[in-house]
Length: 130
Image (cartoon, rainbow, N blue to C red; front, side, top):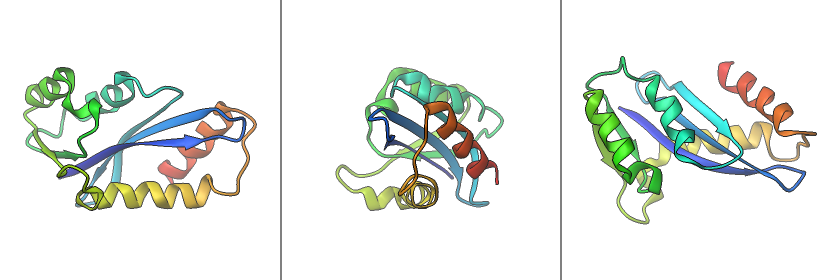
């Protein structure tokens, strides 16, 4: 089972960053992720496409718009994956990914300042790859 979500991060220059991650629940490993300045479909689709070798996996998400699009649903089908979604207004159903984002934010976002999106991306890459 793989969990996913998108989180918004407010940067110090009043811009925003959007992070999506796909985390394997068995290994507690980030399988793929993407950080972008806008929450477009490519934010979710780019890391999803790198999961094609995980045939048979269950992909669990909330009911965000990204996960309800034909593009996302059809890609899961093409990869032989099963879609699972949290109940409406029930974030606890997706607690593992919410917890991951909380830990990431507590370590590299709160009380930190970044000069640019690029500087923030470097820190996110280092944190996730560690």
